[in-house]
Amino acid sequence: MAKLLLEFVEADCIYFTESDLESKIGIMSLVISRESEHYYDDVNDHLWKVIQNHTEFVFCFFNRDYIKDELKGGNLFFILNCGETDLIYINDRQKPVMDIKSIKLKRLNKADKEEIPNVEIGSSYNRQRFQVSS
Image (tube, rainbow, N blue to C red; front, side):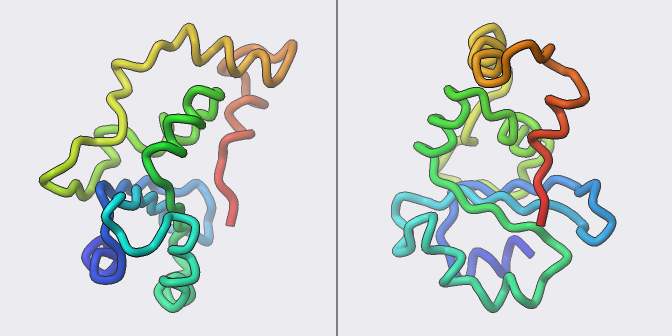
């Protein structure tokens, strides 16, 4: 699947995470390159036929700046779905989007607690919020 996607879009990294949804194999997260002729939110329109023919995947398209902003805001999607073990492609001129070991967990916890008061970090409610649906 990664090879097919790379025929249409220039990506820095592609991550694959298995899905908990019965109807989906997994989540394909693409970090669109700055050199790509398609901006990350235009990729859906450009790849509509691939997405339509491969409904067994959930496709997510991002750029590096968006990911950094979301991490600062406490969004755990990228920590859960874009780790070293999920990396299936990396452009040889690039680095992975993030090094999970370098993320300051204390700061991430603070941002998450501010977003949802009185919810303990790691609670089942909190984990469910970050699941991707199709």
